[in-house]
Image (tube, rainbow, N blue to C red; front, top):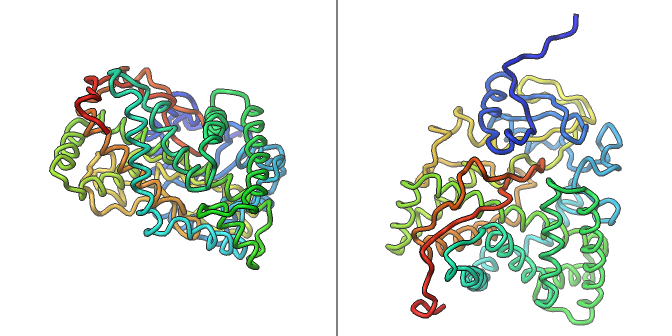
Amino acid sequence: MPVQPDPARPSLFTWEFAADPYPAYAWLREHEPVHRTTLPSGVEAWLVTRYADARQALADSRLSKNPVHHSTHAHRTGRVGIPGERQANLMTHLLNIDPPDHTRLRRLVSKAFTPRRVAAFEPRVQQLTDRLIDGFAARGSADLIHEFAFPLPIYAICDLLGVPAEDQDDFRDWAGMMIRHGGGQRGGVGRAVKRMRSYLAELIHRKRADLGDDLISGLIRASDHGEHLTENEAAAMAFILLFAGFETTVNLIGNGTYALLRNPGQRELLQDSIARGETGLLETGIEELLRYDGPVELATWRFATSPLTIGGVEIPVGDPVLVVLAAADRDPARFADENTLDLARTDNPHLGFGHGIHYCIGAPLARLEGRAALATLLTRLPDLQLAESPENLRWRGGLIMRGLRELPVEFTPENLQENPL
């Protein structure tokens, strides 16, 4: 007799699930912590939901990032990975490769994200933050996603890469097409990726004749000094830093602001702390927001290169494994009061930026941008509040990232003449 489906098992990947996936993940953690499912793309994959299993999987060398290890050819049709990256010859980046190539490329790029270099970038991030808030502060209302959380990391990462100011609005348009793919045709994403690829190839050629202090120039110098970085690798690295770097920060700022607005007691504690010139609660608060409703819901694709066991479940060779960071970071076996937002939480080894050799290389920059964005919003717009009921807000329907489509807010208009910036 066929096995009857469990009526208690929650539905995954519906619009209702996108709005609040945490009850479904709690059920999976308890009943099927390593769960085989069919994704919306039709690809079958394993979801890993418990914290201990997630940490194991994220650091397991038998789980490759390279899609050539997939047991099917789904990656060739764009159903695995970023749509359009294969057609645009942008596959050779940190999210798709293993050591030793991963080690070599990460070493080159990590020079752009040292604590010293990120700290030196702080005045520029603050300048961008204030400029964007200037654009709507006197109006008394805004969509914080499109007017603030989205453009801030775009302009910041463009500066870091060395994209000229006159070209940055093009990047903003392409990036907008890429993160709207949950509600539109995948072909639009592919076109945006191809345009970005063409631009990056042209920019690399231009910079060879006029190297600067930016990341793309650094990649070119490394290639010219024997690091064997091909032009495709340089373009792919610039692409993935833009793609992964900006959307993670968009969602950190958007989800973080939304969580504070839904938890007024915690928001008030943070505002008071910032007003006193303290930084401790802001720093622990960013980590808690990453845990509570982080920007990356599922870690990017991994593929079993040999049989392995996760959580007592045998994973066959070639099967995709998706570690559910959002589920692991609310595992009551690791986090006390897992569904409570506690900005002062100090025992907080969350997986919001991953774990192991693929830990997010841009995490220091994302943290900096998140701190600047939240502190400045709460200081300049102290009575910020939602302008729409939470049940009417829409979440993007993508697989990996978790973020709002829009975040309409209201506040007392700021008198820019009395508060020049």
